[in-house]
Image (cartoon, rainbow, N blue to C red; front, side):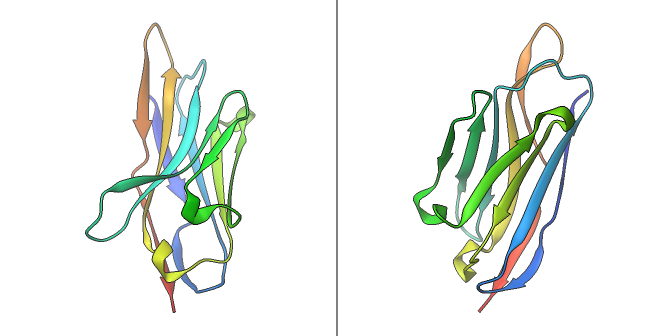
Length: 120
Protein backbone atom coordinates (compact mmCIF):
# COMPACT_ATOMS: atom_id res chain seq x y z
CA UNK A 1 0.00 0.00 0.00
CA UNK A 2 1.36 3.39 -1.02
CA UNK A 3 1.05 6.27 1.42
CA UNK A 4 1.99 9.93 1.09
CA UNK A 5 3.21 11.86 4.12
CA UNK A 6 3.46 15.64 4.01
CA UNK A 7 5.50 17.95 6.19
CA UNK A 8 6.67 21.52 6.33
CA UNK A 9 3.53 23.57 6.81
CA UNK A 10 3.15 26.20 9.47
CA UNK A 11 2.67 29.86 10.28
CA UNK A 12 4.79 32.49 8.55
CA UNK A 13 4.67 36.23 8.09
CA UNK A 14 3.98 37.76 4.70
CA UNK A 15 7.14 37.84 2.63
CA UNK A 16 8.53 34.76 4.32
CA UNK A 17 9.26 31.29 2.99
CA UNK A 18 8.27 27.72 3.66
CA UNK A 19 9.27 24.42 2.11
CA UNK A 20 6.77 21.60 1.88
CA UNK A 21 7.77 17.96 1.45
CA UNK A 22 5.75 14.94 0.46
CA UNK A 23 7.27 11.48 0.64
CA UNK A 24 5.75 8.29 -0.69
CA UNK A 25 6.23 4.99 1.06
CA UNK A 26 5.52 1.54 -0.28
CA UNK A 27 6.56 -0.43 -3.31
CA UNK A 28 6.54 1.97 -6.26
CA UNK A 29 7.60 1.16 -9.79
CA UNK A 30 6.80 4.45 -11.50
CA UNK A 31 5.19 7.84 -10.84
CA UNK A 32 3.86 9.85 -13.77
CA UNK A 33 3.21 13.17 -12.05
CA UNK A 34 3.89 14.82 -8.71
CA UNK A 35 1.88 17.85 -7.78
CA UNK A 36 0.66 20.24 -5.14
CA UNK A 37 -2.87 21.52 -4.69
CA UNK A 38 -4.40 23.82 -2.13
CA UNK A 39 -7.80 24.56 -0.67
CA UNK A 40 -8.35 27.96 0.87
CA UNK A 41 -11.23 28.45 3.34
CA UNK A 42 -14.55 28.38 1.52
CA UNK A 43 -12.98 27.60 -1.84
CA UNK A 44 -12.40 24.55 -4.00
CA UNK A 45 -9.12 22.69 -4.21
CA UNK A 46 -6.94 24.17 -6.94
CA UNK A 47 -3.74 23.18 -8.65
CA UNK A 48 -0.62 24.97 -7.41
CA UNK A 49 2.15 23.18 -9.30
CA UNK A 50 2.78 19.91 -11.08
CA UNK A 51 5.93 18.13 -12.21
CA UNK A 52 5.89 15.31 -14.76
CA UNK A 53 8.23 12.36 -14.94
CA UNK A 54 9.76 14.00 -17.98
CA UNK A 55 10.65 17.09 -16.00
CA UNK A 56 7.97 19.46 -17.29
CA UNK A 57 6.40 21.84 -14.81
CA UNK A 58 3.19 23.82 -14.67
CA UNK A 59 2.30 26.48 -12.14
CA UNK A 60 -0.82 28.38 -11.23
CA UNK A 61 -0.51 31.98 -12.41
CA UNK A 62 -0.83 33.21 -8.84
CA UNK A 63 2.37 31.46 -7.73
CA UNK A 64 4.60 31.79 -10.80
CA UNK A 65 7.95 33.27 -9.90
CA UNK A 66 7.43 32.63 -6.18
CA UNK A 67 6.97 28.86 -5.84
CA UNK A 68 9.21 26.10 -7.17
CA UNK A 69 8.37 22.42 -7.40
CA UNK A 70 11.16 19.86 -7.37
CA UNK A 71 11.66 16.18 -6.61
CA UNK A 72 14.04 13.55 -5.34
CA UNK A 73 13.32 10.51 -7.46
CA UNK A 74 15.45 8.19 -5.36
CA UNK A 75 13.33 8.99 -2.33
CA UNK A 76 9.98 9.34 -4.13
CA UNK A 77 9.67 12.79 -2.63
CA UNK A 78 8.36 16.04 -4.02
CA UNK A 79 9.06 19.50 -2.62
CA UNK A 80 7.39 22.87 -2.90
CA UNK A 81 9.60 25.84 -2.12
CA UNK A 82 7.36 28.81 -1.39
CA UNK A 83 8.93 32.26 -1.29
CA UNK A 84 7.47 35.76 -0.95
CA UNK A 85 4.41 34.29 0.69
CA UNK A 86 1.23 36.34 0.77
CA UNK A 87 -1.82 36.12 3.04
CA UNK A 88 -3.81 34.83 0.08
CA UNK A 89 -1.53 31.77 -0.01
CA UNK A 90 -3.14 30.65 3.24
CA UNK A 91 -4.67 27.22 2.63
CA UNK A 92 -4.40 23.53 3.29
CA UNK A 93 -1.83 22.17 0.86
CA UNK A 94 -2.15 18.65 -0.52
CA UNK A 95 0.33 16.66 -2.53
CA UNK A 96 -0.85 14.31 -5.23
CA UNK A 97 1.10 11.60 -7.01
CA UNK A 98 -0.54 10.68 -10.30
CA UNK A 99 -0.27 7.42 -12.19
CA UNK A 100 1.55 5.59 -9.42
CA UNK A 101 2.34 2.07 -10.51
CA UNK A 102 3.03 -0.34 -7.69
CA UNK A 103 1.78 -3.50 -9.37
CA UNK A 104 -0.27 -4.24 -12.44
CA UNK A 105 -2.45 -1.17 -12.07
CA UNK A 106 -1.69 2.53 -11.67
CA UNK A 107 -3.68 4.95 -9.57
CA UNK A 108 -3.50 8.36 -7.94
CA UNK A 109 -2.66 9.05 -4.31
CA UNK A 110 -3.22 12.10 -2.11
CA UNK A 111 -1.43 13.33 0.97
CA UNK A 112 -3.28 14.16 4.17
CA UNK A 113 -2.83 17.90 3.79
CA UNK A 114 -0.73 20.41 5.67
CA UNK A 115 -1.85 23.85 6.84
CA UNK A 116 -0.01 26.92 5.61
CA UNK A 117 -0.98 30.20 7.25
CA UNK A 118 0.49 33.51 6.13
CA UNK A 119 -0.07 36.46 8.44
CA UNK A 120 -0.12 40.04 7.21
